[in-house]
Length: 64
Image (cartoon, rainbow, N blue to C red; front, side, top):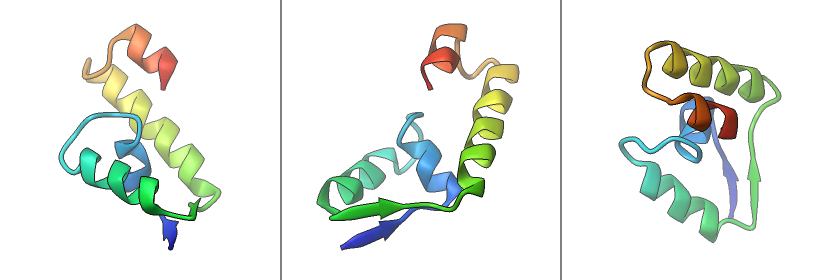
């Protein structure tokens, strides 16, 4: 299976939230995983927002 991840699913690979386990399972089963180029920028923005909201520590933010 080729799996396409939108940004909300892509973020679930790095941050534990609702359905993160499900996304990890799908990725493990996939032959290939794809996303759009804009997914990188959107994911960075999502991580920065979580940091501003203090939902990620400095260390977690640096890791993701």
